[in-house]
View (cartoon, rainbow, N blue to C red):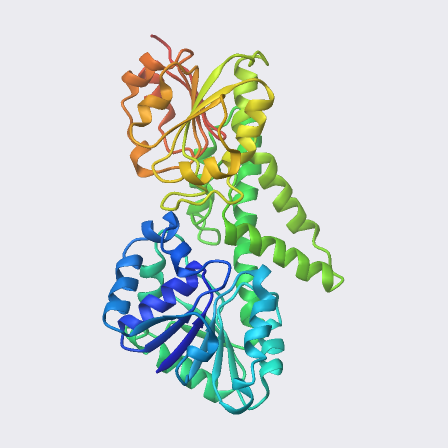
Length: 429
């Protein structure tokens, strides 16, 4: 098929690479805010496993062509939109082009737009076209795998031709089993938001239980295991932590809250979920404050992890941003290690005397520090040299924001452990 892709998001780049990889003829029109000269240099694209090499392969094999203007595009069967919410005007401008008054296409809306926008864009193009809502469900760090070996696609479609074309477009990735969940367009758009709303609710609820466990002197891991063993609940997204972030997850929650508000059905539940999450981003700071009884001025803290999750360079809405502001407000100096996200962090907070960044050796961040905070659970942090850390950290304090360490083992190495709903102190040194 002949496909025109429009956008510069991760979802656009992944679709461009994957569709060209299986033989479709793809013209990629990047959004003017992020042309290829800029996009190709960004860490998040180059670090995404397998993606950049497949983009280069598509361009070298001429199944993927970069274009600067719509009039450079070849005649197309499909228009695939993957834009951010702020780029909605660009979609309307593109689809209002005279080209679509005569040439019939199928619109695939893979953008993070409000519920109902696929219908509105379809109306703008004209009823002679077909449209499909295909909400973006990719995960950063495994976008290529998620696209080429999907577990599900939410397909919002109200006509047979649109569904037929989309199934043919993605046939190479739908061979083992039918992964399409077909429903009306608005239903698909709302389902995507509802899924993320439910996942966020589970995380925030578990964080509330962890806070209660702290107060009652209960190890929340026992509670988590007991809850997860109940088949009505399960273990997924049942891990307490120091808050979630990310551009898509946080944005989808706000979009769902907006949909609720605009419909006249404001959601107290969603507001609570978002409030709890923002509060949890300060959890490690409050534990540090309690441990030192408020005497924080002049202290140094090491932080492991800045990215909002492992496998990405992004720090959008990441807990580390809230944590840093709280620490700096109390006169705490920070030494931070992250294998991928330090440049993104520096772009946000700038150069500071009270922030030193490291990308190679995580133990360098701990030199001269009083305590270590684990914020992002990169695999490189899972099994540190505890005896070495005991010698580096002045107060031998470990603040585990993701509960990835074993409290008893950490304490057996002479360190004080504080997790989210978990704690342990050494009996001997």
